[in-house]
Image (cartoon, rainbow, N blue to C red; front, side):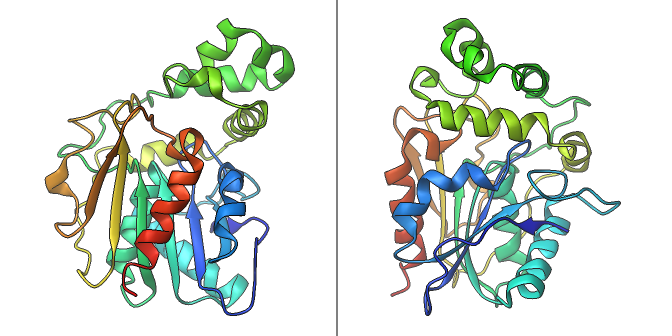
Length: 265
């Protein structure tokens, strides 16, 4: 079962916002967004099984099963039944599954470069980001040096974002440690092989799907099939932006989440 990391901005009366990270990441990837979100939401960043602080058990790890686990964890651990949700990459796919399976609980979805929007699921045994995981396991022991040497930093991040030079040490440190310690990385990859998002979402639930025009992880068109997405979803492409949108444009990401969440008002 996924566990939530520290709860941020739990102010009385604010709606809940669940944040779901991607494969090989952790809940702390969202922390640069907290200052912009805490005036509007009680923030619940999730660590998926085998990621961050969450243990890995013998449990289903496909996106639908993870969506069910998040609903169970939110109610059991925090007494939260209804929430908005935002997710990146695999987390974006899980966010879409949450809305499809639990329309009475999910109030809006902001899917940031979501996986699963393809006609055919991935078939390869090894994930494309496996090299990044190997590098993370090595470089976690000399983070300061790796960050300060452009060739090493480029090796780790150039395939993730063309804006790799602009990444802060804090973001790099968090992502390296999360990737290096994600024991759920390969089990979760095996669970999504041959899979795709193919569920229906109620038109009553606002959905925004945002991709960067420079997404090298889930490139257009093969991983950004518009017809696979919910027909009523708002589809946005951000200029000069890569896969981890909140790294490149945190303020814009906050704006997307808020506009989607409060579009019903």
